[in-house]
Image (cartoon, rainbow, N blue to C red; front, side, top):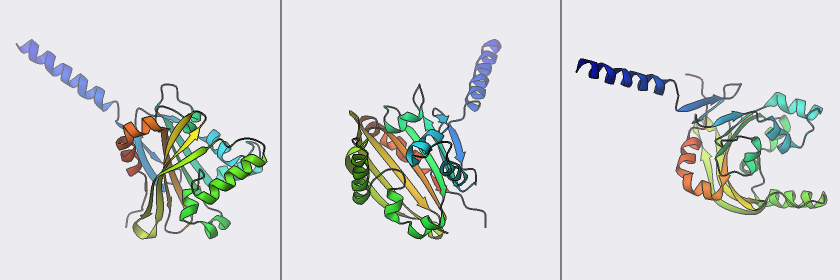
Length: 225
């Protein structure tokens, strides 16, 4: 009997130690310590630099890319068994992209709620129209088509920070991808923090509650006092 109790106690101890060795979440903070969020530990963290080059169109060896790297922090997480940054634009598994931009003087003067909506992908009608015009001028069909708005909220945060939370669909190739986009402008108007959670629409509908929990952790960090 004593041996049985000892065996059970040993198994409980092993289970507890195993659980302690596998944290439930990965806690993330940008390099300047301004923005915080967490994702389940089942996500694999990736180097987001290829995403920055895709979004900006900069050549990796250009001066523009160098200057952008000095004022932009970003990271990405993929829950796929074969993680890749390409899953931002299409995957049956969730993908998270987060970035923090220190704004230039010109950007500070022009940033708006619509600017926050369009900070990564074209969301508002004028920006979508401009995107299509530019694609056609280059002689290629738009990568993003058949935009469908799903949610649009204005965020009024503490100490004067503000932001937007928008959710929308885009058809990319043969699939429809859902993007959940949160963008926050800090109270000084100098930094924009963005999180995008995405996966194919059939995945997003099934797991929307999980993604809402991830998005709810995306916050500005405040110094004490």
